Image 1 (cartoon, rainbow, N blue to C red):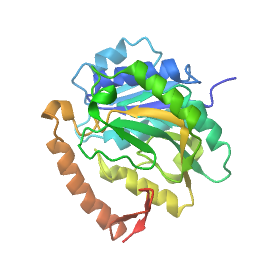
Image 2 (image 1 turned 90 degrees about the vertical axis):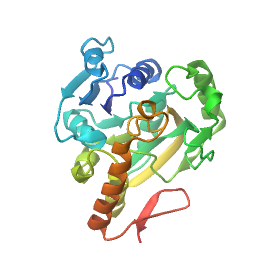
Image 3 (image 1 turned 180 degrees about the vertical axis):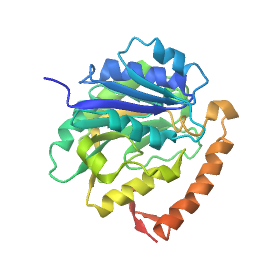
Image 4 (image 1 turned 120 degrees about the vertical axis):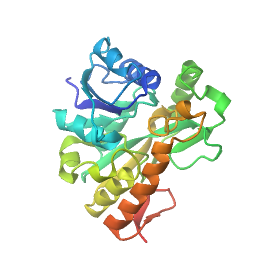
Length: 278
């Protein structure tokens, strides 16, 4: 059977994690030979050269933009190139577990309304919060590693296999802008709003627009991904473990843009999912 989905990544100077993400998709996906699109913007860390010489059959687009599209704009860029029924978004700081894609595909087929299906996440406690939440297991930094160079792939793959076997639940929430959605429904809502480029608040805005249009969100325990934790936006390795000034500034600026657009700030339900404006 031909693949119903296309894998899409938007990336910025995240080469070491991108390599892991791509390798995991080609190794662990059910539809492992699906079309793969990567948008690389303003990369200076060797990403461009790696893409030009990759062995993973990736369709890549390299751009240098004075006004960056950012992760959200890069996702829009990739989505415009998709010609399959579904888009499978992931971030460059993911490592995907076995059959993560087909589990989402099987789940989305259960719903008649426009539905976006998300994977359950596992991530290291890099910010020191130490608290799991519905749809995300937060573990100590030394349990499976916290960086590309100390990540215990074998342990994670064994752990995720057991997790899938032992759990069968869903949450009515989104967990970051990733997961499986139909190309038709992505185009219908218009994707990420470019006013939030390069990063921050575009996901909450998108989820609210979808809620107003009666889209459904499902997070399933049958699909698991490792999330290194905001490595694509916070630039931790470049800033001695701290969030970058670029990210901090974007969070402040885009919070104001969000307020101006919605005439208020977001409210969240018991699952941590945005549910309205206050």
